[in-house]
Image 1 (tube, helix red, strand yellow):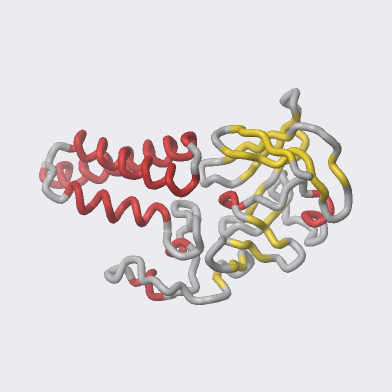
Image 2 (cartoon, rainbow, N blue to C red):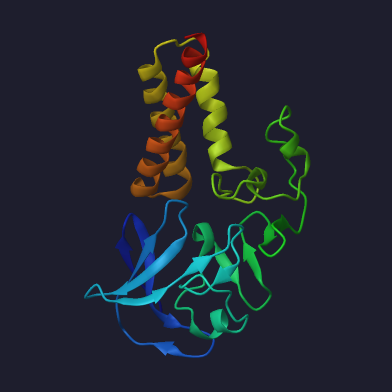
Amino acid sequence: MLKYVLCQDRYIEILGTLPFFYIPDKTRYLHYDNLGSIDTITDGQGNIVERMAYTAFGERRKGDWRVSDPLLPIILALTNRGFTGHEHIDEMGLIHMNGRAYDPQIGRFLSADPYIQAPYNTQSYNRYSYAMNNPLKYTDPDGYRSLALIAATITKAIVVNVTNIFVQMAIAYAVTYSVTYIETGSAKAAQSAGLSAALFMGIGGLIPNSKNN
């Protein structure tokens, strides 16, 4: 039987069996970074029980950022969730991203994306690439479309006739927050993504003015 606890807007497993050992009835809290990747696991008293880290494209490595022994994640990991919250298939070195399987060692999916996300962006034409080849900025929640790109496309369509930079920033925040929350269910991740989108919208809006001056 599995038990779950609601933590940071997400349900997390706190009791279950793992491939090589058994975790008794203890609470474990998962902590996420700005991309939604699990980077720290703590117990009920707030003590760190495991640190997790990944390369830019999602391959597991030790919490001290050294390259990990391929067998260690299988033996030691307290959860099979990791990079951007997706399920790691550690025995095969792959990540299950819902729609498609992904190989973080080469930064490519094992099957082609049926969608061309942005016809005017040449990065879209490689249907095996991950998150427009920009994993530090974008995520791919379902294995098909980049989450940030969806929000950016919607925002661009709305602000095309808006000239006030603060209104543009508010729109960028609202759209990105909504899209991120719908996809991840995490208010914290949505807020972080929304603030980043608003900030970059503001910076982008100031560049033309600086050139004119």
